[in-house]
Amino acid sequence: ATSYLLGKGFENVYHLKGGILNYLKEVPEEKTMWKGECYVFDERVSVSHGLRVGTYGKCRACRRPLSEEGKKHQHYEEGASCELCYSEYTEQQRERFRTRHRAISLAKARGVPHLGSAARSAKETKKRAREWAELTEEESSSTVLPRHNATSIMKS
Image (cartoon, rainbow, N blue to C red; front, side, top):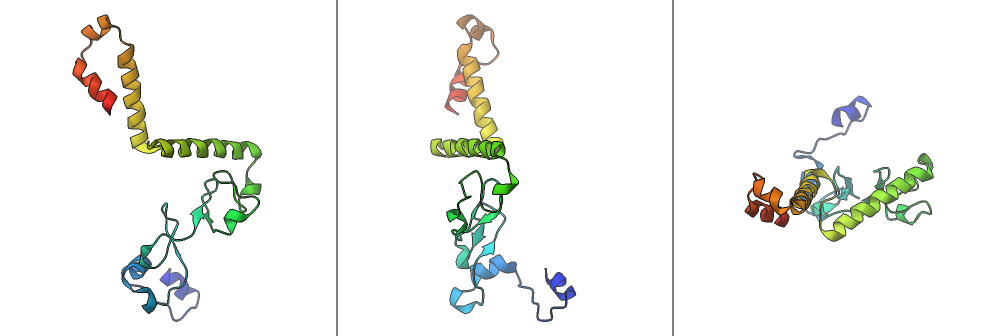
């Protein structure tokens, strides 16, 4: 960013040692010239002094930052659309976003992962437990998997 601004003709451009996040973390708020929040590329969306989570959220449809004001707009619907993306998607797409949002909310309420390797592991563990439970006594005696492992699979 520094070289870009210098290339555009700005003269008083400085580079912060350790970056902006380090500056916000280390320099007391009363001693900085920083105003506002800093966008970050994770679920926090924005941070302020002391790396406190900022006020911005994220539209779950388009992934753009979303202000508190944006959440009050008529086209904002949690998980489905915001003012910026409402006209970019069809009603069918917004319905798909709603379905995804319900699934994420349900997983969160249950305390289970929704996406990623942890979710795949949990799903695979449940599948194995169901398969094991479906085995008949005759099949279970001939399987290679010892009975004590079925219990550990079901507990996982």
